[in-house]
Image (tube, rainbow, N blue to C red):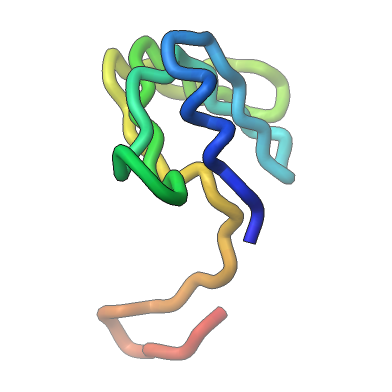
Amino acid sequence: MPDYTKLRQMVSHRVTFEFDTGARVTGYVAACKPPTGQVQVVNLVRADLCDSTGRVLEHHEAYSFVPNALVGVRVTEGPSGREA
């Protein structure tokens, strides 16, 4: 598992998170959670969610997300519970 603890050094900085699709999330890092150990959630302020062309799809004054690598997707309600 990658070490995401370096995100704690980015508090108060404007940071861009880039994804394999070209989408980006840009904002000021307000906090990392939990307060110690592996970073599992990043709280951003003044966050922009952009598509691969740089167009802002959403703007949020406060936005929390999981900055870690996605390892799976599965249906938890509905007609199928199989993993993707």
